Image (cartoon, rainbow, N blue to C red):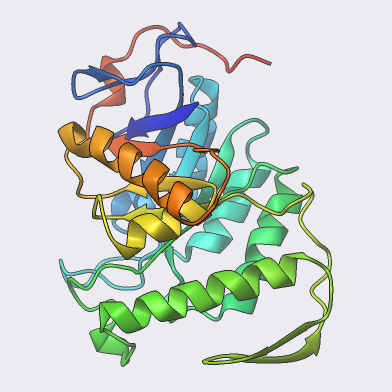
Length: 272
């Protein structure tokens, strides 16, 4: 089952849950359909995000995902803290999957992300996912704050943080020495689901380290990848799993586009 969706305004999705979402003229088959929202600008105001979450759920959409930015290349704009907003969106909904797409772990303390994700998981009744990535090097997100800008180093930090988060979710005491240090801390409560909260990784490439990382996680979020390259990405993920000895379990492919939701047909509630 794949995820597809949009970065546009919220309207009704297709009334046929088996038809897949129509994205830029391409039907991806059986799919869950999600809305991908910016956490800045007029539509990224906290109250607007809560209203959009309610509207998306009422219109039958299956997931609502929020960007994680601290500054923008466009200049001075209002920016909403995504985890606080996601908590409010969880309290205002009861069915949709929720999470950041994506959180750049290299500029966040991983234990804080682990706790925030579990809090969202409990607040939403197990509807949380955690989308992670390197973060964009374009604009002031890293350089204006003195954060690490080298993508290879950020990749190392991302992988280290993922290991820490999984350890934190185990409920066992965490001892870690690396870029970050933790000495015997237990992180409670644990996620509601055995195995933890689903982890989805972003990739801008159909090969290399980002694909190998995504193959080890629960889903992949292609960014800046043309739709005609998606089959190559799927094949690369399968090959990466074989090379790393990971059982074939492809997980969701989260493909979000700029298609307007207003073009979709009659509203439909998600099937129980």
